[in-house]
Image 1 (cartoon, rainbow, N blue to C red):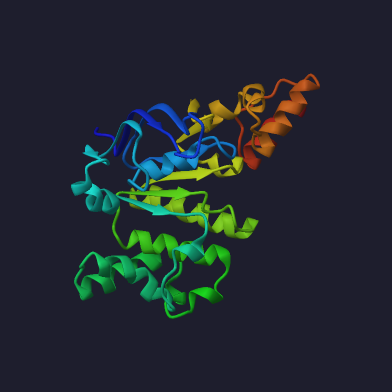
Image 2 (image 1 turned 120 degrees about the vertical axis):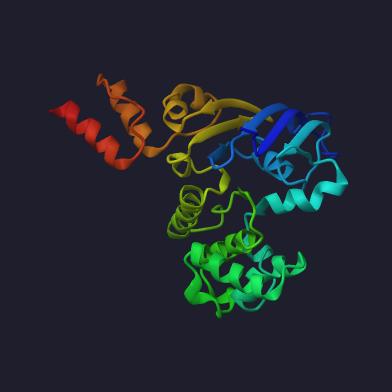
Amino acid sequence: MTPIIKTQNLTFFYPETDGEPALNQIDLEIAPGSFVVILGHNGSGKSTLAKQFNAVLLPSGGKVYVFGMDTSNEDLVIQIRRTVGMVFQNPDNQIVANVVEDDVAFAPENLGVPPEEIRRRVDEALKQVGMSEFALHAPHLLSGGQKQRVAIAGVIAMQPDCIVLDEPTAMLDPSGRREVVETVKTLCREKGITVVLITHHMDEAIDADRLIVMSGGKIIADGKPAKIFSQVEALKSQGLAVPETTQLLWELNQQGMNLPLEALSVEECAQVIAACLR
């Protein structure tokens, strides 16, 4: 299967840095239809990597391909951005209209989509993110989580194969964070859209198909979330935490218990502790 996103020896320098690469020889493939979380502390390179996926930033060295299209080819930029949509941290920076449905229609209109098709796409996109009842509302009156869902709907209306979300929950309260994460999981699981979620919230990675951990512009871990999070000491050495469930199990093991660290959800964590106590 052809990867939807592929990087080869990807390197990137910001002009203002003193010779230190923000991305250092990244080799990565992302499969269509997968839910991938990229995790790392501030300055790890995760957001810089996200912006490479739809040519917001271009490589200083190496290559990035989207379904085989070279992102450095100017003639392919529009098609690349139709294939990979971006959702950024602050939804207010992506909302451009005074009515929700007009905002969702903005991108398809600029792509020259016929009006009747725009209507269909807007209705479907709002339905997919659970915002149909707010179609005629003013975006500035919505909650942070609702605004972010409108921003996601605007990207969905472009009908991308992949959505990259660059720390979309960083400015949201816990309720808003849950809304957004559940929305993107549903898009992946039910609609087959590839989702790449950039975050520093450990709990948002629990249900991912794949977890990529970055530090210092490099990938330092790549695999199933349960496997990666079980490496508690290695993650802590990089200044990274683990989900609260993993932390609890790890601390109990320090006290002499022998619990599997792969139990990530609250339910799984409770079950393994209960089984041990029995």
